[in-house]
Length: 297
Ligand code: SIN
Image (cartoon, protein in one colour):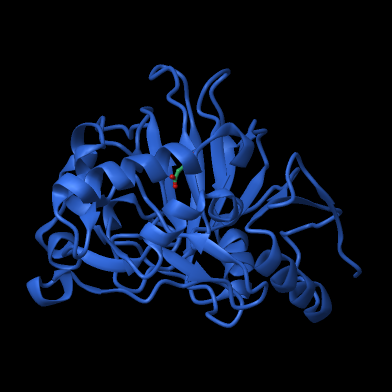
């Protein structure tokens, strides 16, 4: 089936038309989708009605699925599907993670040495207002950076820490198992990558995990990161998505960050998400290392 798609507000976002993700996609359509995702890091498909199995099967067309370190957020039915929700079960326990608060600009899995950079989020229940999600195009942000900032970040590695991410969460989400702690020591990733398909450079950032820049003391690293975040998250680089039930948004964390606005805690929001190891041949996939003293020097 030829793939029909149109640009949204910005060229880094494309909406795909006429897809029925609950049906197996033919090889030609799946190849076209992989091509399109390599060039447009945010893809939107509306009006879907998916079981968790169908969401997982569709996501797996793009790479192996990751079971994220927060296994308490995993669906009891299909563990590769995570529940992002403020809802509670009959024992008043959260059924998933990330509650109702604001989520600041971040890139999923940036705290992992080999992050799974693909994500798909499927809207099942939505609050009447708030809870919108925005994405920022870090390829356009890099292209727009003043030369002085380009020179300062080129060849530099950021220090990404899950401990900082945890501090930005609410309530029980701040607590992790010893197993999750063991899997998430601070890591280094280059702050600039070149896309394997487009050849364009992009920033790799996550304001909720970066705690410094390797080889720079805090007095120079922190203000530089602040300046880059201020520049990169200007409205001209941002797409804000007004969710409708049935939307699936897929994004590439290798060249975008996203943020969520808070919503009324008494309203209901249920999203289902998958996390995908995208192919290095088609996407930026940061290749990190442990933030040892030697690597930080
Ligand atoms: C996420 O950051 O993965 C969740 C975003 C959202 O809840 O809209």
